[in-house]
Image 1: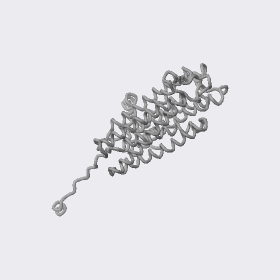
Image 2: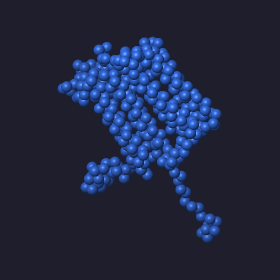
Image 3: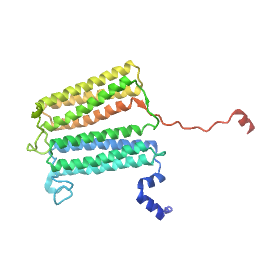
Image 4: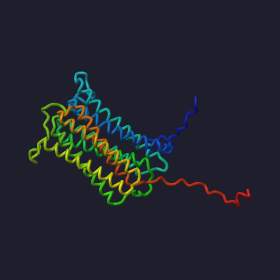
Length: 340
């Protein structure tokens, strides 16, 4: 049996007062550990978005009809609630898994030496976005799956994905001043691409909110587009036009990067984005012409997450932040060596 650690009363008080600092004093994660923690946090964010879509597509949106409890008398789903209760309650439980992943990312970032405050702040930003989205998810249930609150729930998840993607990228680079790898005109083109992609996702939530998959039953109201003179077909076509704009911008960016002989990083990220966009577009057209089967709608939601991550990776690839050079011990000159 190994020796018992000598834990003093001061250690207990410090751990209670500031547990993150207590852990950081006693553990230094490797760079790879921090990167993995950031990636797991990003992956779990995508998982909970996709499973949230599965809740809606299986009609389980009100499987737990109240919040924060599943029923007025039970915190968990009961056997009487059946399949829909299990699906909805399971998605709620995944929020705790996501919180654990984000917490692990915060601890790893805080414990890195030297401490990187910018990375830790990104972790805390994820935490508060998760908390805000959990509350908004409860509001979605309490208002009977109002499509506007459902759209806001997805958009806040997109913001969470953005922060998680930035943290993952920042965990793989240093804290030096960013050095641009492309010219200002190319960077402006990428910002147009980011803005168009954000608008594409926002309009996609309107397509969902006006479409047939209400999340529970046909009694759930859908978005009323009459005041702006749009029906579901019209807003779907607008979504398709925006998708083609994003594809065109991605192709134009790749062409410009080739023309200016840009580094491999931006070129590779733009190529990846273009391929993801083509796959996402194919799924979108197939689901439109096949009356929106649930499995394809779910794949399209997953694809929208990948598109958003790929767009952000293109943006972040336009600059580099090298790690600080490790100082090597000064080598002795020949006279010193001969004197030894």
